Length: 244
Image (tube, rainbow, N blue to C red; front, side, top):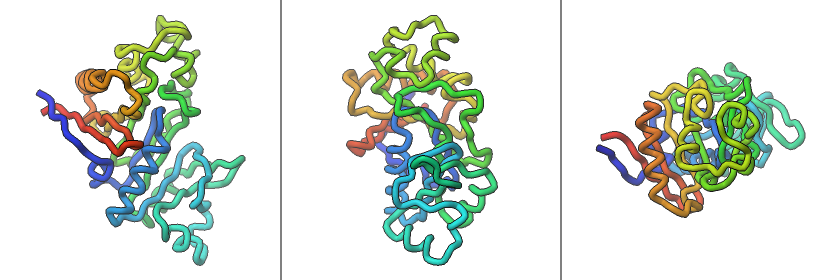
């Protein structure tokens, strides 16, 4: 039996301080949507990374967190982006010890733990994902806009996928291929299922809506994750599927 109901990122984050976000298909948008919701709930929120994120204002470098005025003035409007350094328009990743310090200053720390070059699916490089070991929850994100598009169009590092599976760059992403990305060697790499919420993102672009539920059930059965959320931050729609 399945339990299917509306939810919101605020509910998913309610008992967490450190949340790592991995995968592809709209991680940054989802992270910042979640950050705004947590701010509205009265929580102070830091958005940061263990790899790299774009340096969109408001942001501050880690070494300046304790400088007079730089902290309070920048957080007055909402959440704050934090990076170690600024390189070519991007904030670089914090160390695990840096993140513990950030956690002493903020109620919630949202951490982008890998990159995907705006593709809806990805395969991790050998050094990815860089998940904080003290994460209370891990969001594994994939974009539903990958369905029916080719591997070459949809998968970051698609050549790695070609070498490890019997598919070509022009193979269309089916429900089975999409669901197959939620394996321990691909999107679930280094992820503890008990701490994981899978986010099937960009529900609004999916032509056959029933396929999202079909994949969510398949992922729940095969991975042991706690829940799957079918999401569209653009339309503020979030549906949570769990095994009843």
